[in-house]
Every structure is written in structure tokens, then in C-alpha cells.
Image (cartoon, rainbow, N blue to C red; front, top):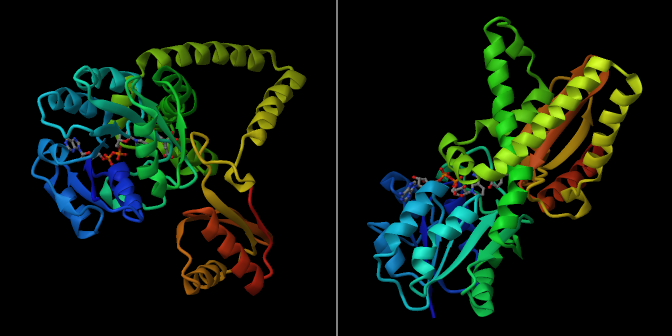
Amino acid sequence: MTQNVAIVGLGLIGGSLGLALKRSKQDIHIIGFDRSYATADEAYRRGIIDSIAPSAKSACEKADVIIFATPVNTTAVLLEEASLWDFKDRVIISDTGSTKKPIMEAAKVLTDKGLTFIGGHPMAGSHKSGISAAKEHLFENAYYILTPHEGASSEQINQLSNLLQPTKGKIVVLNADEHDRMTAIVSHFPHIIASSLVGRLADQEKQQPFVKKLAAGGFRDLTRIASADPTMWRDITMQNREELLIQLDGWLQEMESIRTLIFENDPELIFRFFEDAKKFRDRLPSTSEGALQGALYMTFDLHIDIPDHPGVISEITKILADEQISITNIRIVETRTDVYGILVISFQNTDDRKAARAVLSRTTDYSMHIL
Ligand SMILES: NC(=O)c1ccc[n+]([C@@H]2O[C@H](COP(=O)([O-])OP(=O)(O)OC[C@H]3O[C@@H](n4cnc5c(N)ncnc54)[C@H](O)[C@@H]3O)[C@@H](O)[C@H]2O)c1
Ligand SMILES: O=C(O)C(=O)C[C@]1(C(=O)O)C=C[C@@H](O)C=C1
């Protein structure tokens, strides 16, 4: 029997979910709704959804499973409005929001009426937003967290997990408190730091106009996420305010002790500060070790030692293009005359990276590394 799935909000996450569900072996009809008709129309034309609904209500009332993929404050408002909608009896309602406690609280208007709500959060994304950035592989190897309401049965949790299988995410069940505490540590607070570092650069650029030209690899790597959508991050910050304040207090204390460290200028203690951080960072699971991507998201990068000669990059991209291996990013980490430069190419998944490594080892003698 056909399963009707409604996706409300067809941006990066709703669109990627639609693309992933499209490869399902189950008989699924995806009904999409977005407040922007142009977005819904693009989703339909790209085959991400099977039909466009005229409203969120109309999409949801026909659905067996509903996934809200809107910014978290909007999702809370929609859940409130949904208390007046006529759902199918056995409907499962879920979302993709980056926060879970306030969403679970907002869903109470529905669960109090006997409806089933299972919070969801795929722990993979991007600083890009909107349907144009949607990718079928986005959730591959990422944790996909579910936070079921206490009324949800294991059969319903399994039904949702089965539906989500084509995302190739790893489903884990957590409670909403744990979820919000952990995502504050590894996702939400780092985002605040990235944006504030960019803010410091913007302030100081007034006195040092040349400084932003020096913002090289380190600054860029550390602040990539500051380019993300401000609406999404405003909502997350407001909804996870308590955990963020806890993180901020800890950080201020940490900065105070780092201030003392620098003031006292003890070489051994300064060395140990960097050494401890390096040891811990180097032990974090990486996708190259077969670990899951997740909050500690690793891109599928291949580092290639290339000589600093004109034409080398086009040689490599041509080899990959001939093999139909798509790349998501390409950058030079270091290039100096007479010294090997390092080209970093990012792929969508481990399979593409493996195929690229294999073809480049057959056709070139450049050494390659996965960090
Ligand atoms: N971007 C990420 O990295 C990421 C990762 C995991 C989860 N999430 C969560 O997923 C959700 C969606 O994020 P995104 O990155 O896809 O955002 P997005 O901005 O790319 O997409 C959101 C979509 O929702 C639509 N929308 C907004 N208000 C609406 C309404 N009232 N009715 C219908 N549609 C509406 C917008 O037009 C847009 O197309 C958020 O809750 C976010 O916290 C984001
Ligand atoms: O990779 C990024 O750009 C992200 O910010 C993705 C990221 C994260 O912090 O890891 C951001 C928010 C989501 O809730 C999940 C994933």
C-alpha cells in the first residue's frame, strides 16, 4: 500500500530528505509544501516531491507520516496550528529541527490528543541553505537522532526508522534533554564562537583594512559555519538558550585561565595546553576510520601532494571527470615554488573518495593522504 509522506519546508534538509526517500524501495508518495511556491515548484520539477499541496494543513491531512523541516521556531508555531487539523488516525508526526526539548513541548498539543510525535534530527547539514543545496547523500553515515514522545510505540519508532533507511543515516534514540545538552556542546556553541570570531575580525578591520586579506586556511576552516542561515541559528539559539548559557559560562572560565596562561608565559604550560588539545582532537573518530559523520562532521577529503606547476589541478579534475566522480570542493592548502603543494578535494561520500584515490593512483604518481 502506498505510504503518503508529507514534507513541510523544502529547503536544504526537507529537499535532501525528499531526494533520499525517492531511492526507497517502499511505495511512497511525497506531498510537499513550502511557504515559497517557487521552492515547492523547483522540488516538483527536480522530482524531489510527487505533488505540491496548497497548504501545510492540506499536505498533512493526507499523510501517513509527516516531517516538518522548517526553522525550529516556525515548526513550534506550525505544531500549535496543527492541533486544529484533521489527521489520519495512525499518523506519525516528526521534524528535523536542531533542537528537541522545545519542539517536544510544542508537540504536546498533538500528543495530548493521542497523536504520535517522534522528534527527529539528522546530524548532518551545511552552511548552505535552500533547496538548491539539497543533496541525496547529505545524511549518509550521519547520526539521525529520534526523540520519541513517551506515547510512541516501538512499532511506530520502527516504522519511522524503516522509512528513513534510504537516508543511510544511523538512527539513534535519545531523550530531548540529552540531545539538547550534547548538541549545545558540539554544534550550537561552536556556531556562536565561529560567528563571534568573524565579528572580531569585522570590528578590527576598521583599524587594519588589510587584515581580512590575511584570513587564510585556519580562519576560514574555523569560521565556515558562520556563513549559515541567520534565521535557522537565531531560532536554535533562542530554543537552546539554557544549555548555551551553561556553555558560555564554562567558556568564559576557560578563557580566564588561558589569559593567565598567556600572561604568565610559562613555555611548558603553553606547550601542554596545545598538546592536550591536539591529543584529544586527533583521537576524535573520523570517517576515514569508518566512524560515523555527525556532530563531529568530517568531510570526505582527499589530500594530494601535487607539485606547484600550472596545469596540475586541471589534470586531476579531468581524470576525475572522465571517471564521472563528482567533487564537492577543491582547495590548495599550501603552495610554494619548489615545494610540494597540497591539494584537498572533497567528495560526497566515502565511495567516491575511494574511487578517486584508486583512479589517481593508477594514473599519477602523486602521494595521497586521508587525514
Ligand atoms: N542546515 C543544517 O545544517 C541543518 C542540519 C540538520 C537539521 N537542520 C534543521 O532542519 C530544519 C530546516 O533547516 P534547513 O537548513 O533545511 O533550512 P532552509 O532554510 O534551507 O529550509 C527551510 C525551508 O522552510 C521553508 N519555510 C519557512 N517557513 C515556512 C512555513 N511557515 N511553512 C512552510 N515552509 C516554510 C522555507 O521557505 C525553506 O524552504 C531546521 O529546523 C534546522 O534546525 C538544519
Ligand atoms: O556542517 C555544517 O555546516 C553544520 O553546521 C551542520 C550541523 C553541525 O553543527 O554539525 C549544524 C546544525 C545541525 O543541526 C546539524 C549539523
